[in-house]
Image (cartoon, rainbow, N blue to C red; front, side):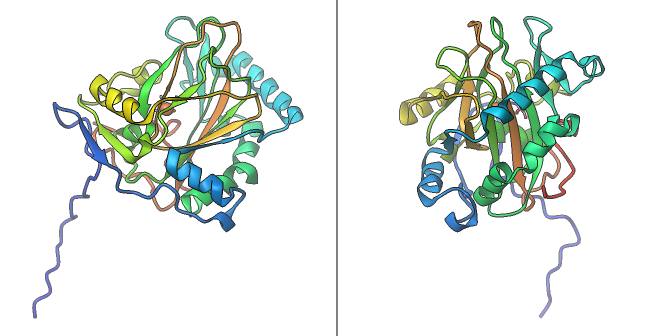
Length: 303
Ligand code: 6CS
Ligand code: FE
C-alpha cells in the first residue's frame, strides 16, 4: 500500500477570509468562546456562561483605590517622559498632539508589567482560554477630555487575523478602567453576542497600515449593512462603571467607542492575552507583519 506523503507545506486553511473580496460576508464563528472550566480560575460558572453568551464579562471592582492611584501616577509619568515622546510606541491623537495610546506598556513600565502578571488578571485569561497565555498586545488609552478620538466599530480579531497572523479566535482582551467610564465620555460599546459572527471586510491592507489605523481605522472596519444587521440582531451595550472596574471581551466582539467631548478623560489599560496554542503565523491578509510592539512575537507564557 503506498503511503501518500506531501513534501510541500499544505496551505493553511483560512476559516476567516477577510480583505480578499469586493463584497462583505457574515461568516459563522468556528471556534469555542470559553475554553476553560469554572474550577480553573476566579470566574464562576455563571460568569463563564455570560461571557460565552455575550462575548464579554464586566468585573465591578478589580483593582483597589490605592492601586488605582499608583496606575494613574504611572499614566501621568508616561505622558511626561521626554524619552517616550518620540518613541513609535506612543500614538498621538489626530486632532491634537495629545497622547492617544502608549503601546507595549507592559515593557515600558514595571508598574504595568506587574499588573499583567497579577493572578486576578492573567488567572482569568488562562481560565477563559483554557491554556497558558502570552501577551499579544498591551496599551494604555488616554482618551483625554475635550478631544479623545473615537474608535469606529471593528472586530479586533479581524485585524489580528489579517495583519498579525492570529489563526483562531482564542484571545481575550481585558480593559481596566483607570478613570470613571460614563455614557458621555466615550465608554466602550459592545454588541452582545456579535462575537459569534465573523464579518469579512472588503479592501486591501496597505503597506504599514498601522501608522494610520491606530489613529483612525478604515480598512478592516465592517460595512454599514453588516453593522446594521448585527446591531439589529444583538443591540448595543454601553459599558459604564467606576475606575478600578474591568471588562474582559472576546477577540471577535464587534465594539467601538465614541469621541470624548466632556472634560472627563476615559483612560484605561488594555491587555490582550493570546493562547500559547494560537500563536501568530504569517499575516492572512497583509503585505508584511506589524511591528512587535503592536503584535508580539514573544510567545513566552506569562508567569
Ligand atoms: O489594531 C489593533 O491591534 C488595535 N486596534 C484597535 C482599534 N483595537 C484593538 C487593538 O488595540
Ligand atoms: Fe479594538
